[in-house]
Image 1 (tube, rainbow, N blue to C red):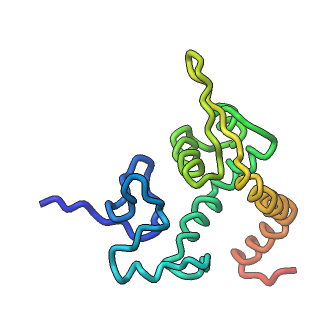
Image 2: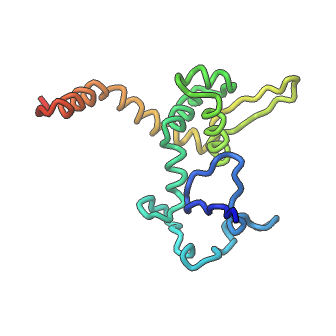
Image 3: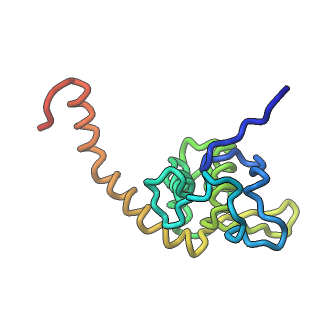
Length: 166
């Protein structure tokens, strides 16, 4: 018998994957009003403590801080971009990875997807107000990395050679 594996709580699901039935509220019911189905899930961290394994914020943290998530959000800081513009802006990202990450970021409410009713349809992506709020600290992180990369690379070389840092 082929059993369908149950994903671990908070795991990033591939686009198009169906949520477990207990995670999907009935039509017309707000997601926050649905009680968890098991006692183990009833202790879900609502306080945003990402250090707890059951914190829903940890999933968002995974989406935002992934290699592609950071670069997509930072790329959209200057304004809306079409799919191919994002792809060209972010060196090394495949169309498949860009598409998957955009779907996740749209679902998280950080990116807005706008489709113009033309033939063919024109689709552009822009930061939502939440995404704009998040983009400032992400840009600071990117700037810090750009500034400190030479020091980090030097530390890596010293470590790999077994010599103390200068």
